[in-house]
Image 1 (spheres, helix red, strand yellow):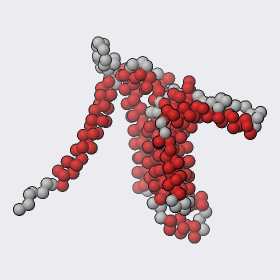
Image 2 (cartoon, rainbow, N blue to C red; image 1 turned 180 degrees about the horizontal axis):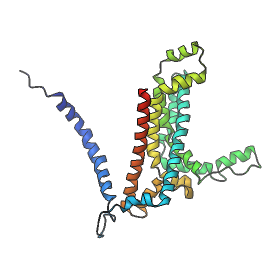
Image 3 (cartoon, one colour; image 1 turned 30 degrees about the horizontal axis):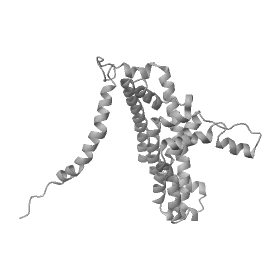
Image 4 (cartoon, rainbow, N blue to C red; image 1 turned 60 degrees about the vertical axis):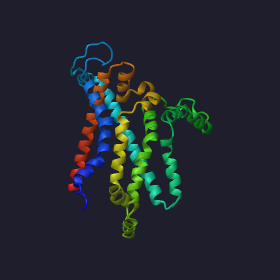
Length: 287
């Protein structure tokens, strides 16, 4: 006689235990500790007496400076995501519909190169290109010797440029996968019925590739909101964002409660944005 078979839920739970254990150790425990820090009156290191307060959260609402910083942060994040969405979708469309065959992999590898480059090296390379008297200026002045400097280092466009360079591959890959699943017969049928290219793009390709666009936007927007290296290096005095303020709170100010509170406020705003966005998408899908 064979042994008794375990219920399916037992086997499923046993297989999921390692993943749940990793999530508990690597994500939920650190987040729980950070959440506890956010209510403390002092950094929990040393001999200072620790109390609990909501004052760290009140900073976000009572200081106009924090609202301005949050506004700059989300403007940069939305601009980066929008540029990546337009550029990444068009690049993915060109790759998926070009009929290059095996040559597509060469272009995909070139697009993935930022993933294989150290982030600091990539960012500092841009400082050599867009600074005053840098490579960009040299090219422009070679073509137009009397032209003024076009360097824009230490500006918000410089921050967006660095972020787009670093996160564009996410959008290209997600859109490429989504576009590759679209049946060629659908596009060919639209063309045979006389549809123009902009009609095919707006009525067929973009709606059917929307899951890739949405996934790429999420993968880009969330880390960009908390980014601090690009704003710090490429933005200079103009690079004050929530990410840099949080970093300063932990590293320079040694004010862990303030950094933790700002981190959770940022997380709450991001979750609220995506909750609203997902609700809009759900209503449109039901129409």
